[in-house]
Image (cartoon, rainbow, N blue to C red; front, top):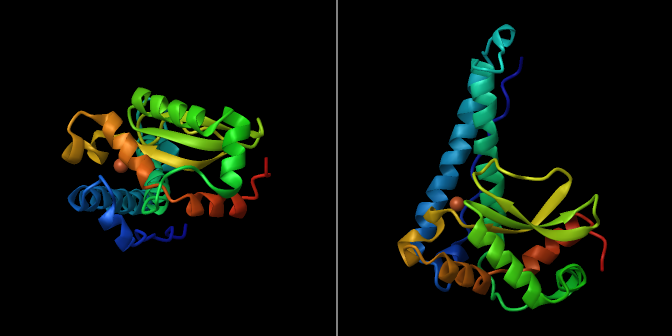
Length: 203
Ligand SMILES: [Fe+2]
């Protein structure tokens, strides 16, 4: 079996080091966690290369352990690549196509924002505004760990990290203040680029 190709962390955009309300130290530590997810993804795929398929067992087996933890590592990669990519902007109200989608599916930008904030307060790790291709609408889905609970056939367009590592250095337990800071740094142009790239139908 060929060894799966290793991947490398995406470089940290320098503008992430100058966010408003999220410190450079916090972002640098956060980026190191992301690098760790990439390293573990590569390590797990390397280990899978030599695993005994005949010993696979649902209670405990090497294959099971590796594949379960692979979902955590890959979730950590995908979630953080979204998160870092759409920060560094001016925040404020959405623009362009995403503005129309939000207004159609949530009623107003304020309702979307209130629902995302609440979802972030209710989650243990993530809140995602995703376009659900089966329901043909945006919805704020909730996540706990890196591998819970992504929904099939939905494309995340906003990824709000509410793990404590995202805010404890700057805000201690005040997650709500961090969520406000997150929103102040969103880059709507990036979100609109994803809407276009994934061909999410316009409102
Ligand atoms: Fe994170």
